[in-house]
Length: 50
Image (tube, rainbow, N blue to C red; front, side):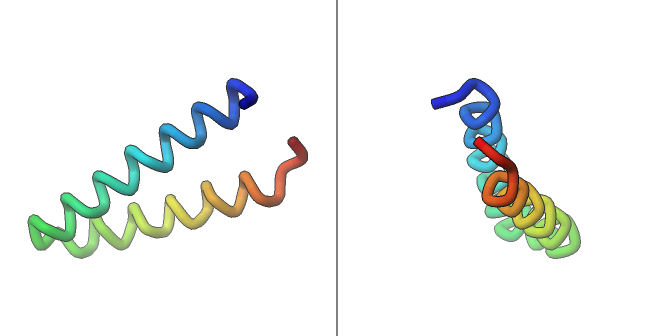
């Protein structure tokens, strides 16, 4: 796996965990922000040339 892709994968995992924790803490605005960040990050991986 390319180093950049590995970093992005770790970042996606971290943001996903943060999002779940925010939702558990009833921090729905924060969870929504994290969801949007995750979506953009995932899309960037799919669009960018490997």
